[in-house]
Image (cartoon, rainbow, N blue to C red; front, top):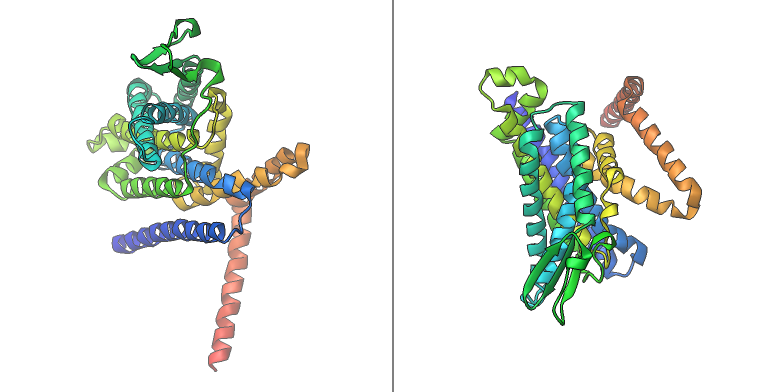
Length: 356
């Protein structure tokens, strides 16, 4: 039974990788053939970003069972850290691809360090208390970034929370300008790097879920008291899931930040965290493939309905409600099972008739 389950998990994981790789190949071929419009090309990198965010949050919410509402804060921290790192490396590293990789890694590390600082006191809380505190920390991170001024000149890098204190030598350049955010950012993000980010996220999350640590994390979600009784350090494993999730969110944020010429901290607010959580819930708690599909569809859907102007968000909400009812309603599930069983029996009867 254990080997059968393992094989089932392996098949699901391979299917997830195969769908992502196939989608990338199709998009690349269509782009090379000139079959993609500029608007569709503009969706590709954000879709990769939100897939990574949904999968990383699913590790924390779906697999570990902890409700966090501060994911946008780690995304924003990674975004602005990546922008700063890319700006500082501009005169040192000639390759845009190398600078992008360094910025993404740096954004992930900064977000990971912040998650450790936040997680040590916070992860002793549970349930609604954890959700409220992570929401508060996400808003704190957003406001700190929104009031930060960073500049670079021949004397080095300067940090301050007061614009009047940021005095740069001749030839110096502002990288972050407080509420105005980052302006004049060199857009070095690419779709292939977004594809690599998705693969890295899937590899880290899927391998962690299937490892001993992953089984311990699931045990914490299933029954905290039982997990503690067999010697599992509940706080340590929750912290591990929290840090991995934040690190991947920071990498995704860096790619997102370097995809736009200007960016403000207000983008990474409570609504962004809720959107990512919606991707996870609609895709299925703990279902990684579901997060990939839901993030793609639910990001494209409101953008595709933009021509409807004022009605598009109403239609988007209706679609979300219908999908939730179809996904989680026991009656709908039973009806789908009945229809599926009838279709299967009809197919078998046809096969038997053909053989005869």
